[in-house]
Length: 122
Image 1 (cartoon, rainbow, N blue to C red):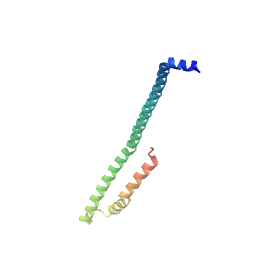
Image 2 (image 1 turned 60 degrees about the vertical axis):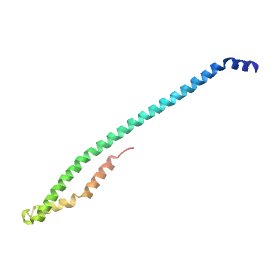
Image 3 (image 1 turned 30 degrees about the vertical axis):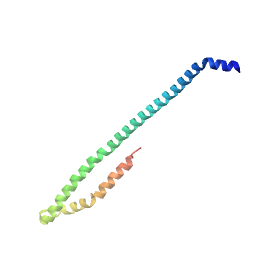
Image 4 (image 1 turned 180 degrees about the horizontal axis):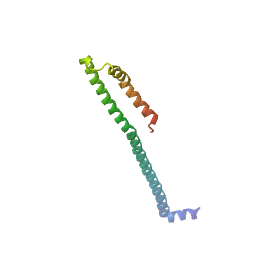
C-alpha cells in the first residue's frame, strides 16, 4: 500500500495532466458535435425554406391570374349595371356563371388543396 501511495505521490502531476487532457478531449468532442448539429439544422432549415418558396411561387401566379379575372368580372358587372342593353344577351349567362364559379372561396379552396396535397414537411 505504501508503494502505491509512493508512486502516486511521485507521479501526481503526470496523472493530473493526463486527466486534464482526457477532459479537454471530451469537451472538444462535445463542441464539435454541437457545431455539426447546428450546421445540419441550418442546412435543413434552408432546405425547408426553399421547398416552401417553390410551393408558394406557383400559387402567386395563380392568385394573380384570379385577380385579373375578378377585375374583368367587376368591369363586366359595372358595365351590366350601367348599361344592361350594351352587353349581348348571349354573354350574360357566361359572365354570371364565371362570377359564381370563381369566387374567393373557390380560390381559397384551390390554394389550400394545393398546399395540403404537396405537403409542407417540418
